Image (tube, rainbow, N blue to C red; front, side, top):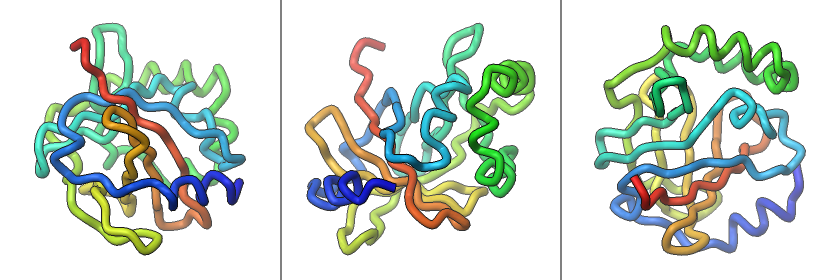
Amino acid sequence: MSENALDRYDRLAPVGCSDLRGLWRGTGVPTGHRLDGVLERLGWFGKRFDDDDRVQPLVFRGRGGLTAVNPALVPLGLVLRVAPLLGTAPAAGAFALVRPFMTTRRPRARLREVRFRGVVSAALVYDDLPVIDVFRAVDDDTVLGAMDARGMAQPYLFRLHRVTDR
């Protein structure tokens, strides 16, 4: 992983939980991480924060619009082992077929303040996975997230931009 990307992350200001309300469009930050490009290839849209206790951490584009995927149905260990294969067209096609069976309307994460890399900032804590996404402010409508997951040597970095036209 590019140390420059983590250095930039470390220099950003913390985010308050209330600053994250609403729908956010996500994109990965290329750093050489095994997950680079995988979520986008699978149709990931971003995240939705209704309040501190109602968060949809995995929002995807589907035929009928945006849908939330239940992270409890994501085999994280397997995903991390085979991540490069998941960025292929056949994997994206297979995921599009099973995604309707993985959707949820219930919140699947919460927002809490967490100390990560020496700074307390807003963090998305998954209900059913050993994953915490910790956010830092780029500007009022953009945050940089660091996905810290058990089994990953380095965090996966992604950017979220506030959706204002929905």
